Amino acid sequence: MENLLEVIRQGQISSLPELAERLQVSEELLSAKLERYEQLGVVKRVRMDASGCGGNCKRCRGCSSIGTGGHLVYWEKGEKLQ
Image 1 (cartoon, rainbow, N blue to C red):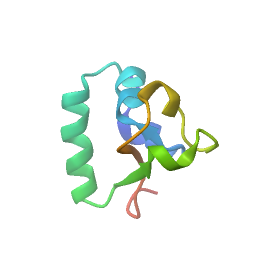
Image 2 (tube, helix red, strand yellow; image 1 turned 60 degrees about the vertical axis):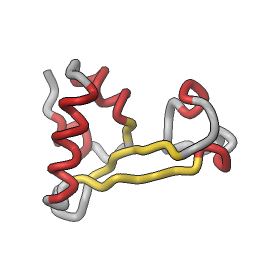
Image 3 (cartoon, rainbow, N blue to C red; image 1 turned 180 degrees about the vertical axis):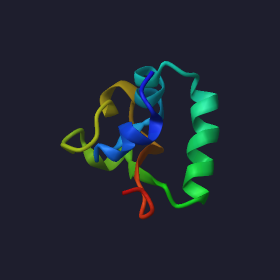
Image 4 (tube, rainbow, N blue to C red; image 1 turned 90 degrees about the horizontal axis):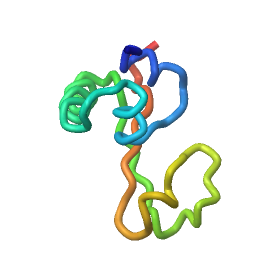
């Protein structure tokens, strides 16, 4: 299994479902780890307005499979992750 911080360190932003699938862990467990890492400044939560992006953002993946409305939450490396 890949390391969560190594995946995020690669510089791409990732959604919770993408990370869970890649790391082969439950979304619940991963969510708890990400929230703790966010408190420590290691990762950063990014909210995107799904209704406004139109599916044209080159940095995010999976918009169209989630649907529109509300906010999409992605994760990227924080200030303390080198």
